Image (cartoon, rainbow, N blue to C red):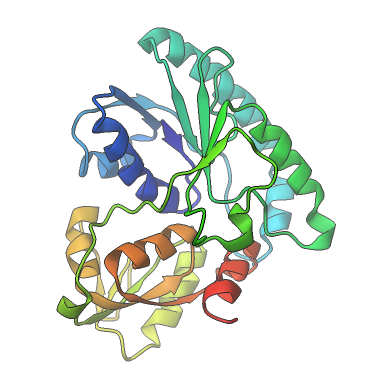
Length: 286
């Protein structure tokens, strides 16, 4: 299995997915960079790491995601081709019988069944970006099956996960690394600097201005005494379980976490991120 590295949301939900797979007596190979594997191994012990580089992409911080992606399109396509070749080597080397990709388009095999995990069958696009949906659909065709991370009847992703096209797909519900909790035991208002750099830096500045917050969880330096820097994700989880309110960007994985934690989300969209802008309108600004 492997997961997209743009922010940590895909890694976070993949923890729960891997737990489910490991619980079925499967031997799991996790293809990622070592730093991400260390996080996942906090929650699951019986997995094997295989080295695979992250996608060669950086956000400019300008709030124009489409422009950033367009500028990086050639590097991304080259890397996806490389990724596919490297995966075929891993399939042979480790006798892998099933490939699972959380939004890595090049992480599929031509020789064994390959599953693509997504909550976005339909991209949140402006009218002039519609060619991206065509490219997205073509990339999905390389996979044997699609797992839709949402509930078919109560869709947290709204129209993004609406399935009118893909017969080789199935809704698999919500996934979060957290366990279900009781809302009555919560007392803290917590800010979390989620999202990729430099957007998490922008978010930290906004959270520091919010005097109602008890703690702010961040990996970035700050002079605000409320900012804490947990050494591990498990250490940070202690604070999340006490959250009555969680403030941050409204990524889809964060929405699933909020539902599992049974707390209130006070979320904003990452600037220029059309998917989060849609999710924000859907859940917080009807």
